[in-house]
Length: 416
Ligand code: NI
Image (cartoon, rainbow, N blue to C red):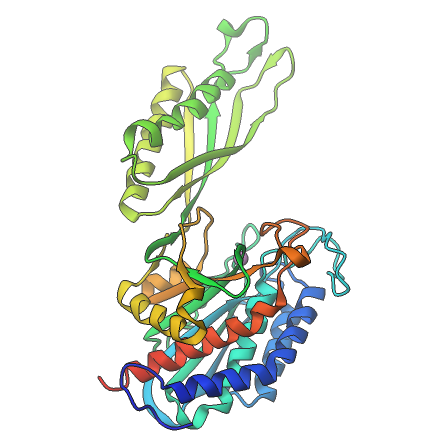
């Protein structure tokens, strides 16, 4: 292992060293992942997970371990022995309210809580990358900040949490972070491969609540009241005209209503209907246009029926935008680290990812790690009770994360 020959990237010797170290610690990564998987914790309740993470980081000699950031978050720093920038690597730690049905020997021991989104793997991979980077500390030109983040799935009602709170509590400061990388496992992508997309990669998520108010009446005499049920039916239908008639057809927009609540009876028209739903977009300007048309459509459709509509249009998370310059460099790193045949472009996802908040503050690059393997039944979608992943992909994640950090610091060292 030597210092870098080329300014453009950490050299081949570094890659070999990362690969060697990753091979050594692969069993640890699998063991960590299984331990987290057996002990999943919901958003903002990641006490045990955070404790294990902090213990492991201290045991491996990470320089600085800060706990209780954004409730149960852990922010740690590996200081390279040579000067340079600070790059961040992020993992999320929370699980979902799902009863596990995988039958795995290390299945969840907590009723109705399951790591069905792979955050157990993300956390274990970042611990693995930390161990690799600590071993290479003498040669690192700069520092690597590790963000173990709680509540990616969204904090419980009435609580704050997730990436937004991590940023508020200084996760990107002291020292300031110049770039950030993150990954998500993907059961649609073959194990051994990674994928990425420049620009909008995961959707902006808006959370919608509409309350339509009329006047209660007898079901047999609707003219004596003002019917919010018929008005709501028209609103639900009219909303679908927004993507179809108002937005550039080349831009993806999803509007879904998932809850329709009317507490009348078979012969009673209630005075109120509540609608809950979500809007997904992949472009900040389109997001703005949809919001504007949404308000107009709901208000005026309600008014046409003599009802009133109250709208709560909640910003749940921005579109995840991969930085083009950082991304171009990161893709080269990934191609060198795991072979260009294993690195491909992906279509955007209409799911949300709160990594987007970091990527608004500092250049960010997020990618998918394939975990699909039909031979072991690793084919089920995220957020389902059958979701399993191919653990053979975990060392690849470690290598990718470690190399992204090293290559970024090496690449930006020459310009300092
Ligand atoms: Ni997730």
